[in-house]
Length: 620
Image (cartoon, rainbow, N blue to C red; front, side, top):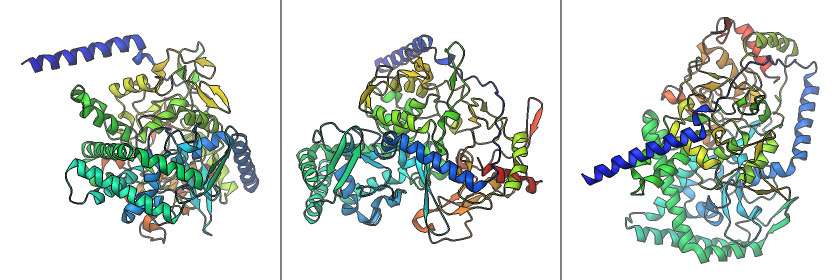
């Protein structure tokens, strides 16, 4: 009886606290208004070769201008304290080679690749380590974690086998869930039949320390590859044999604590993810527990981490379920170039945000917090706002990758008018309007409910992550990246960290710059090419996803499951859009009428015009 009374008191107290917070913060007053500025229709260039050369020169100039920003975006870990001890990461293929790739790149199994522009780096693109930025070189062991570039540096394979890199694009092979799955299975291999918790811990410690001893004796440069890193702020850092030996000594000193902490975190996060898979993906529970390459859950591992943390505490276990999202939220990874065309502006009296949204549904409008949320989504408790701040500077005006193949200029000009009549009113820069009438699955749009929204507002804008007073070092000087947005102070504006559910209950119509490289289409990557998007009567239910070869006719990555390619093994996978509502290929498939104007979305009865429109879309 007493227990029930205390539960009632706790629930009532929580409701009162939430009500007072809502009244004080104005949680439900944040509105992303969406007036309609004049539609933008970019003209087709007269000379496509010249247009390609110009865009590539603009990208190169932008990257030169933002060299330090790019370094943080591409190479620096998203967390200074979370992740996996670097030595453990590089020992995974030594301890359990059956779960990891070949010796040249054991992380290829999760879609990470060696970027030929990054010479001598000890990891493939997408993995960073804390030694790159730590002021005291030997102040702690190195942790490795993902970089922004792990998701957002993509590739396209040309017919001659060469690759073109897409900075700010999508790594369509990246599979963070598959990475977690492999770690858990590596640990299970070490345990064998042992069930005693203490003995399992000792088995893991011994396994990694034994592997470390053998590996280092055979190669004193195994862990860092004798890498030399240079940046404008910190100068040259040498990750040579001496550095490696010192790191190994530090690791051995702390192994009894470091290794069990790593094990506990990895197992809890993946166990939490399996709970999310069971709750929100019942039709594909086993499949999504392995991960879809090129995709991630909108809240994903962060919710899993929070849920498991609450679940293990007697005081908070009653509220553990509140940490879970409202629905499934699996989405394709987005391109992140040209962010200025998506970001909102202040209204005239600088009290509200208008003309912009951001991600699929715009629920995190401010670019700095979009970046932080992306870092948190990977399952880290403590993220580095410096990485987000540099990424914001880089991505704001980063030009999109240009279509690398030929364009029929005459046909594209015909498509330009079709775009103006049927697409431009919605797919315009800085359109903050949320659309609820296009027929796509709504799971991703409603994934963040009130509790998660409040939690984001409280935590993202706190000193732990990035408050208006948080100070970091950028370009060798102190900076406060969350102090203002477009010249307006963010003090007492935490309501803009994440907008209320009623504001983002739908999908944004994003600008289409670099559209050719954003395949597959719709928020859940369920439509393989632009042709299938515009001609829904021919959409395949099943297709190959995550190929890097390109279909120039239909405009999208090679998709036909009936055509087997040598790269399919280990690179591509079959994607069945009928297997779950969360990955349904329905939507954007019927003409719609708004404000008395009918817009054609289904071109199945006019494929000739569809091809003209596609030719124009290549040029954006």
